[in-house]
Each structure stands twice: as structure tokens, then as C-alpha cells.
Amino acid sequence: VTRAGEYWDERVEVMSRDEVETMQLERLQSQLRRCLADSPFYRERLPDARDVTLETLTELPVITKDELREEQATHPPFGRFAVASRDSWREVHPSTGTTGAPVNTIWSRNDVASITDMTARTMWQVGVRPGDVVQNAFAYGLWVAGLSVHYASAAIGALVVPLGASVPTQKQLHYLHAGSTVLFSTPSYALHIAEELAREGTEVSELALRVGCFGGEAGAENPSTRGVIETGLGIDAYDYYGLAEIGPTFASECSAKSGLHIAEDHVLVECIDPSTLRPVAEGELGVLVLTHLTREATPMIRYWTNDYARLIRAGCECGRTHMRAAGGILGRHDDLVVFKGAKFYPSQVERVVRSFAELSPEFVVEIERERGGSRIARCTVVAEWRDGPVSDLNERLAAELRAELGVTPGLRVEPAGTLGRTSFKAIRLVERASA
Ligand SMILES: [Zn+2]
Image 1 (cartoon, rainbow, N blue to C red):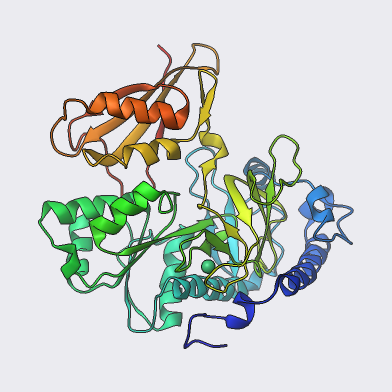
Image 2: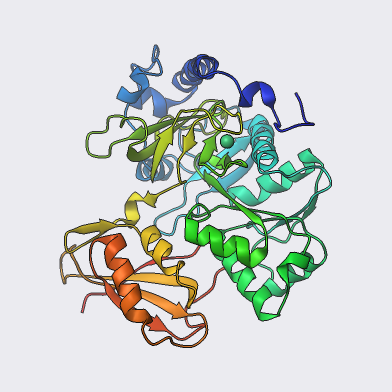
């Protein structure tokens, strides 16, 4: 394994597509054999999965979060998809969903090792090196990403500042002034930290901070959000992707900033049309469906993420061959707003709002449904002034929103500081009770 140059694990990162697929098929079949042998849950769901290939995998049923929840409620506390021997279990990580019971996933000893290695690979990919000072503002504890960045910092040989997401923001600023070179946080929190640095009058070019890695929610690949973060913190900003059921940081950008490279030796990724449940053509928009190739303890076979993306197989200028999700995660299936016949995601509102220097980066999309129905009767974009009101901005903002969304939502611009800030994941879509 080369650790001196561009790659953390060169053998895996630049292997040919044929080699990738050969490795995936072998790992998929051995994963399915384990699941069928040790998991009654999978035996019931996938009775005919013994000789599945990469092509026929797409015919197996997908697993939704609701099904996992139901399985764990019927067979508490972990469900019958926990397949590794119990003495190998090391950590429990529940999902952080805002609705319904969390789904518990388990990491075995080998899972902790492979997650650490995979995270170190993605950190190396964005330029983290021995000697870096990694300010980890990802939440520690139950959330998957905080601990994995902590472990991976040690694996790389970096110094970690384990602040987590629950200390006062002033403490984050203190350690930025003390010489942190890398910041991990949600993009929402990064925007807040940048605001606070501006408020105290810090010249960000004087900070040692060089690189920022942003996950837990989409946003870092949204050009206007990336611009605000990069300028506000004086860094190169990179997008990270993970989810509790699959694991943290298995996808990240590289120096080319041309999409999320997926660690295809660990996770098999499909892009599926939600109406036909068939794979979409390369580059088309679809929902990501993920299969664990190496996870031991709670393996997922065709997990339905609800996350929209476009996959491209073409090699990247960084030399890596693993598939990329171009532009990152483009929307959550649950967050789709259908208003007056137009369909859009809060991320599109984000793109518009954050392209206006007169506005703060904060915003909320408020929706109100018809009484007793599911149709959205009212949709209002709530933004916030950066400083004071600007006279002609409402018209310009309304025009830009109409151009991006294909519909004109209501618009309300509040005084600076009105909307809440978060150190974790922001809620951008808010449902109001119907009038
Ligand atoms: Zn690349």
C-alpha cells in the first residue's frame, strides 16, 4: 500500500472497471451466501439470491428504512439482519432520522477497521496528510461520522481536535485560531462558523485552515453554497456522503471536485428509476440503491436511500476509477415539493438564495397543505437579510426563484439573525398546519 503519493490505497483506487466488477461480483456472492446462511430476515426476503450476478441483482427487492424499522420492532433490538457472531460486535449506531424509531446498525471489529480505512482514504483524497490538525466538528457519539473521522485521523497520523458539534461555536473559533488545518462539519454549521468569523473581524487568510470536508447533509457541491463556504473560511471545500444504515464517508470528492467518488470495493451502487424500479441509463437522475460488499454485522442488500443522484463511470482526472455521483446528492425523495404542478427540491432554493450577497445563507421552505388533503396549497420561501433590507431585492429574488423552480413561491425576507442556526443538520423544509 502506497501512502506517500496521491493515493491512500492505489491498488484499489485506480483499478480498471473490469477489475472493479470482478471484485464486486466475488464479494457480492460471498455476502449473499453469508446472509442466506445466517439471517432468517434475508432467507425470507431473498430465497432465490444464491446465484445472483451484478446484472440480476437489480431484480431482487429493495429494502426500505420502514422495513428495517418493522423488523427491529418485531425482533428487538437489532432485527434478524444482524449476521456476524455476537462476540465480534463493537459499536451500535442508530440512524438520526427525524421521524419514526431509529434503525440500529452494528459495526463488528472488522467493520470498524474497514470504516476507518475507507474514511482515511477519502480524507487522503482531499489532501489530509500526516501532521495536519483535524478539527472534528462532526457530532461524536451515536452518529456515524464523528467517530469514523476520529479513528481515521489517527490512522493517517494527523492530530485530531475532537470538539464534536455540541460545544459553543466560540470554542470552534478558538481552535481555528490555534492552528487547525482541516475542518469537518455539516455545511450548515460551516456557514455559521464563517458568519461568526466575519462578525469578530477575522481575516481568514491568516488562519492555518486549508481544507474543509462537509457531510451529514448535501450542500457542499451546490456551487453557490461552496462559494460562500470557501470564501467565508478561506479554504478548499469538499463534499462527503454517508448514511447511518450504510456507513459514514464512503463517498467523497477528490481534488478535481467533479462528483462524489464511491468506494466501490465496499459499497455496490445502483441508480434506480423510482417509478419502474429499473436502473436508469448512465448519467440519468435516479434514486441510489446501495449494497454492502464487505460489511459484516448488519449488511444491507439493496438499501433504498431515497437520495437522488446521477452516476458516471468515466474515469476522473485524478486517476481514480471508482464511479462518481456528479454534483453530489441532488435531492431527497422525501423533500420533493410539488406546488402548482412544478416539482422542485429545497436544494434548488438553496442555489438561488446563496447566490445573493445581500442575503444570509440561511433559508427555509415553508409548505402548507390543503385541509384534509396532501396537495400543497401554499409554499413560501423564507430568507434573511445579511445586513439591512435592500429595496429592489424582492423582485430580483422572485424572478430568480421562478426561473429555477418553474413556479413563483411566496417570499418573506426576515431581519438578519431571525432564522435559527445549527451545529448539526439544518431543517430546510418546514410543514405548517393547514389554515
Ligand atoms: Zn477524482
